[in-house]
Every structure is written in C-alpha cells, then in structure tokens.
Amino acid sequence: MTVVQLLGGLSYATTLFLMAAGLTLIFGVTRIVNFAHGSFFMLGALFCAHWLTHWFPHWADSAWLYAAAMLMAAALAAAVGALTDLLLLRRMAGAPELYQLVATFGLTLFLHDLMRWGFGNEEVFAPRFPGLKGSVEIAGEMFPVYQLALMAVGPLVWLGLHLLLTRSLFGQRLRAATADREMLAALGVNPRPLMMGAVMLGCALAGLGGALQLPREPAHLQMDMAVIVETFVVVVTGGLGSIGGAFVAAILIGMVHALGIAWFPQASLVLVFLTMALVLVIRPQGLAGRQVAAVHGMREPAQVFHGLRLRTALAWAVPTLALAALAWLGGPYWQTLALDAMIFVVFGISLQAMMGLAGLVSFGHAAYFAVGAYGAAMAHLQWGAGLLLACAVGVVCALVLAAVFGAALIRSSGVYLAMLSLALAQVLWAVATQAVAWTGGDNGLIGLRLISDEARWAFYLFMVLLVLGATLALRQLALSGQGAALQALRDVPQRAAASGLPVARLKYQVFLYSAGLAGLAGALFAAHKGAVFPSVASVATSVDALLVVLLGGVHHLWGALVGSGLLHYAAAELGRDLPYWRGLLGLVIMLVMVASPSGLLSLAGALRRRPGGAGA
Image 1 (cartoon, helix red, strand yellow):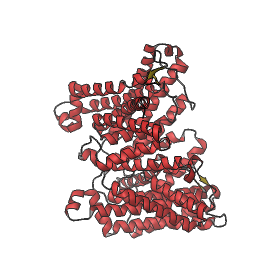
Image 2: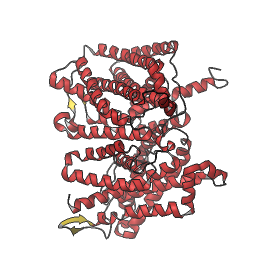
Image 3: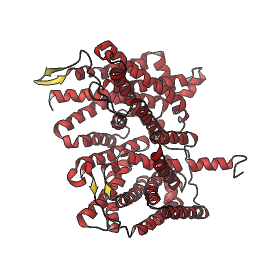
Image 4: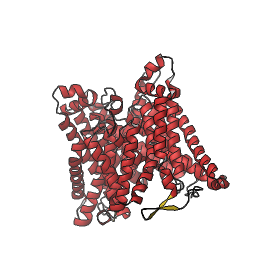
C-alpha cells in the first residue's frame, strides 16, 4: 500500500467517524439504534449541494460562504433531528432495540421520499472547495489537497466531543443521564432537553459529514443506504456507546477499505465486513464496548405466543384458504401478489422461530434466503434439476452456510448479533455482486423454467399448503419441550443456564431450523420469479422479513401471515397510484411501532378488550 493510498484511507475514515460519532452519541444517551442516521447524512449533502449550485451559486466562490453553507446543512440536520426526537425517538425509548430499528427504518423511507419530493431525483455536482483545489505531490504521487485537509476534521471532532462530554456542564449532565436518568431527574434536572441535545448534535455531525463529501462526490438519493451500513460496521466494531472506540474503528475500517482497493479490488466490500465479523467473533462487545445489560440485551419482558390453541389455529386456517381461493380466481395479477406474500410468510416464519421463541435477532437473514435462491437456480441451470430437487439443493446450501456461521453467531446476542448477521449477509451480497462467473453479477441468473404454465396451479396449491404447514410446525415447536426451553433462554437466560439447559446447542438447533426454512423460501422465490439477482441478499430483503414479522406480531402464531399480506398488498396497490408510496409506507411503519410495538394483532386484541370494544 502506497503512502497516497494510506492517506486516502485516513480521509475516508474521517467521513466514517463523523457518522459513527453521531450514531454512537445518540445510542449512548437514548439507547436507540437509529437506522435513519444515513438520511441526515444525505439531507446535509443534498441541502448544501442545492444551496451552492441552484439557490446561491455565488457562495461557491468564497471559502467562508462555502463553509457557512456546510454549517447550515448541519444545522438543518440538527433541526430535523429535534423533530425526530420529539415525534418518534422519545416515544420508542422504552421499546426493545429491534422495534426501534424497524421504526427508524420507516423514518428512512419517509425522509427519502420527502427529500425526493423536495430536491428531485437527479444527482447534484457541487463545485470544489475554494482554496483547496488541485493536488500536492507526496512520495512521488499526487494527492488531493481537499482530502488532506479533511483528514484533520476527524481528530478535531473527536477532541471537541471529548472536551464537551468531560469538561462542560452539559457533558457532565449528559453522562449522568446516560448512567441513571431517573436519579438525575430526582435531583431536579430534566433529562429530556439533554437527550434532545444529544440527538441534535448527532444528527448535525451526520449532516456535516454529508456536506463535507460534496467536493469529493455528487449528492444523490442513494447516499443514505450506502453510508449507513458501513457506519454500523464502524459503530459495532468500535463498541456501542464508545466514541473513542468508533474513532479507532473508523481508522481501522478506512485502512481496510484502502487495502482492499489497492490489493483486492474485487473483494474490497468483503474485506470490510469480514473485519467487523472477525472483531465480533474475538470480542463480541466490540473493541471498546461494555457488556452492560442495557446495551448488550435486546430482550423484552417475558412473552408468550398467542393463538396456539388448536381451535384458534383452525379458525385462522379457514379464512386463509378462502382468501387464497379468491386471489386465484382474481387472475394473474392477484395470483402473483398472493404468491409473493406466501413466500414471504414462509421467510417470515423462519425468522419468527428465532426471534419469537429464542430471542435471537437476525438483521441479515437474507443471507440464507439468497443462498437458497442461488442454490436452486444453479442446480436448475447447471444440472437441469426440477423444482423439488432444486428446492432441496437450496435448503442444503442454506443449512451448510448456517452450520458454518452459526457457531460464531450464537456467541453474540442483542444488537451485536443483529449487526454481525448483517455483516455476514453483506459479505454474501458482495460475493453475489462481484463473483460474476458464478452468479452473473448484477445481470443475475435468468431464464429459470422451474414452473411450467400448466403446473402453475399445482405450485399455487403447494404454497398454500406450505404456509399452513409451516405455521402449524411453528405451533408445534412452541408447544414442545424444546420450545419451552428456548423461551426460558429468551426470558431468563442466566437462570436457564444455571438450571443445566444446553444453551449453545438449543440456540444452534433453532438457528439451523430457521436457516433451512429461509433457504426453502429463497428457492421458491427463484422458482416463482424465474430469475435471481444480488438484491435477494441485500439489507432491504432482510428488512422486509423483519417487517413481515413485526407488523403482524412476532409473538402471534399468524403474525407473519398478517404482516406479509399487508406489506405486499400495500406496496402493490399504493405503488400503482402514488409516486411517494414508500414514504407513506414508512409513516405507517412508524405509527404501528409507536402505537403497538408488539404488532397489529396485539393492537387489535387490546382494542377488543377495551370497555365498549367488540370483545367487551
């Protein structure tokens, strides 16, 4: 690695640290993992770019005015952060981190469409920063002056945050609120303004990071998701709640990124996520993380599954069959929509078995879905396998992957487990994107003929029976002795371990079951769509599975069915008439998570039990 490539890695680390510092600050005070943090980065970039190019282009000729535009972008991000805290974050403060992740993902969808409406779809190229144009020669190579100046921002921000948190009255009270906000309130200090201040500061750092990127790259509407995943890598690698750990991790990831570009350009993305995975396998709480229950746990109070009585299960099966029959009679459009929903019911149940029974949260469950899809597609294209054999290959591939990853994953828990699973899924996504010889890259594997037109009805009937069978299998698992042991591990892990339950083996078994069912869903998805693309391993696919489970209710037997039906129907119907339907969907997700984190079925049950309700 040359000196210039090393400096490039350090410059890239500055952006990562600004994002990671803001996210860490928000988490440290509010205990909320803000998935929408990338939206504030994008807001800062888009606002500053439009200010300098469309609204007041003469500002771009002055270094002071250019810098002022960047600070204004940070201030706007801070103001939007204050609204976010007031309307969403403080209402989610008592919910488990997973529900907070999903709620802030809904915020991501809402802000994305809001910015698309306000700023348009096109890229915006901002001018170079005055006085920092051109390059200088370092070790015989040229390096941009602006990136050299940018390298100084990271240490200055770290020093400023350190002094703010350790030397100022605001910082001392903020640390006290982080440690014990009830005690701070009892002493007469209202912690809410302090928490809002932390959120505003974190969002301002994200907006500033986006504005600082403008001289290096154009502002566009894909910046949010592109930066948030690597920000999570830095935060989790450094240790949740540790700004110093985030600083070290940002430098580490920046160096790995530069190393990958220099020596392994086809595997640069893989190296970043493998670095995070390696750190978490060796040190599950990150480089500087602490094993504190509030940080390390993502468990709810003791929960029981609802709808396990056989009479209730059969009562749900009848309308399910009726709706499936109506969808078939509705023609090709409704048949396709129903098949999409049913495949994600199976995918959702695979995740529900882990989350609902064992409390194991996967934020990268798309890995096993994707491996099942690619395995089935390759078996069909390479060997001429039919539907059943292709699905079997997909399941086996998912089980093999889970057997390899499972030993590392079950050592973690809570948000660390969620982020480690995300890292492994991103490794798989990077492989699917870059291993063109096997996967076709972005062109995908197309031309699958696993389902003939004549057998379409048989496949549809098979999917209906599979949905019912997978749901009833989940019911049997919940009622079994193994299910009871898993729920004990979820609710009282220390007591369960002390009583002699084989903790690791039970977690590993349910993990393999979940991965196998996800692989089957992926294989069926490939058969249904007739093609497989790298997007099946993306973050969006994992989030869709989470939405399916959480919208309906993770502790409701039929939650995945309700969540998948609503999600696919809303996406299909809203997408036909509303250009900003994703923003509306994000708003619905936030409302559901605030009103009833346990899902719509719990909300419906609570309404029935209210005086004057249907069940009164």
